[in-house]
Image 1 (cartoon, protein in one colour):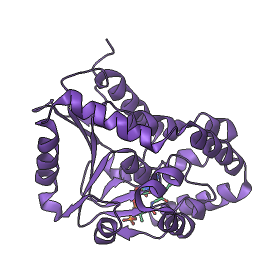
Image 2 (cartoon, protein in one colour):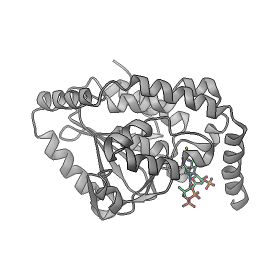
Image 3 (cartoon, helix red, strand yellow):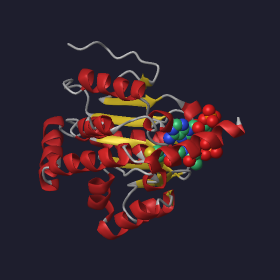
Image 4 (cartoon, helix red, strand yellow):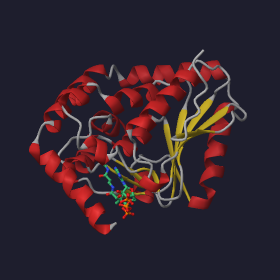
Length: 259
Ligand code: COA
């Protein structure tokens, strides 16, 4: 069996009544997904995907400012075409989407870029009123290649998905609920209780029937492999463009100047 993941980048709560909670733990960088966090999430998937006692997986972000503010821009800036073709985030998010039992994203604050795509890879999104979703990738000279171009459209419809992907504008919790991006919205201080209640409702049902229901829904969504392959190839083109470096440098410089 794989090693129990013990990584500071992702905190694991003890399994409680069939509910496993993983917390992205890099609050000082708004839980931006760097390679270490991606590796830690893979380790958690290796360890828990085969555990029949897990009935619901909850993903949350540490701190009150963010679920995850995207892939780590300092690392993204230096990624090249070969990295895009490795589908670093898309591959991880697909494993999360394929996790055998239902998954719930508990979203407080920013869920941007890869952070939004991670929430989209979960079966359900329960949000605090502070939640803000968005896909700002094109402003940084890249595309949302880790699921938004297919999962967002499947969830909120093509018209709205196009608008959010082209404009990069942020969607607050109430709008997210109105358009079907969020399943439930509660005041931030009630988020953990709301997520536990939702997870509890799922966990009390028959696990085999629940797992098969999840697989049946995934079949309706259709094979996603060809979307992923196209998105990785398109991202490979973006990752070689000078505009991407210019735009990411501008973000990193702004932060450096302010420090
Ligand atoms: N990658 C790397 N670092 C990030 C990050 C990301 N995606 N998002 C936030 N951070 C870092 C900031 O650089 C800052 O670090 P510093 O204190 O060492 O400078 C820290 O997290 C806190 O963020 P800050 O920008 O100071 O918070 P804010 O409240 O002023 O702004 C955001 C919040 C989310 C609007 C802003 O951080 C942002 O625009 N982040 C990038 C979002 C994005 O484009 N994501 C998609 C990437 S594809």
